[in-house]
Length: 129
Image 1 (cartoon, helix red, strand yellow):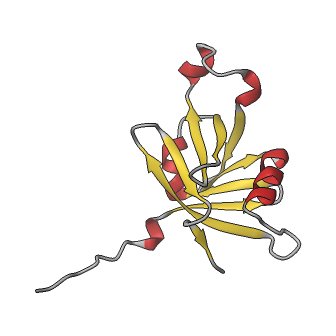
Image 2: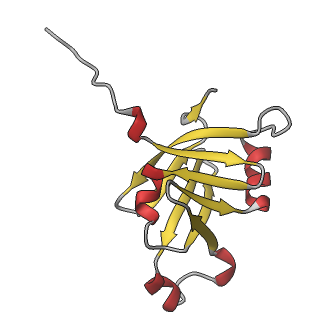
């Protein structure tokens, strides 16, 4: 009775790297942010998760979210970058992260298609190295 646990292709995993000044998404994570210039950033304290939600032009035009909740995402060829020092400072205190010890912390992300949000579990999703 064979009982395989199938391996995932880690090269295609969504990775979220947290630096002291910015949050960087790898190519896979960026797939869901292709046509957006803004995101929402949130923390679910009970479930130890960060949420990064793409906000499309229509939602911005309709004024669905307050202006002060919109964070710019800039994209390069293989990454997306959100610069927000206050948010990262809050994360660093919460998780906690020590940027004197390490300049980047990497986490695995999963995209929740129903809620259209990239979810980063900062307890379980943390990668070493």
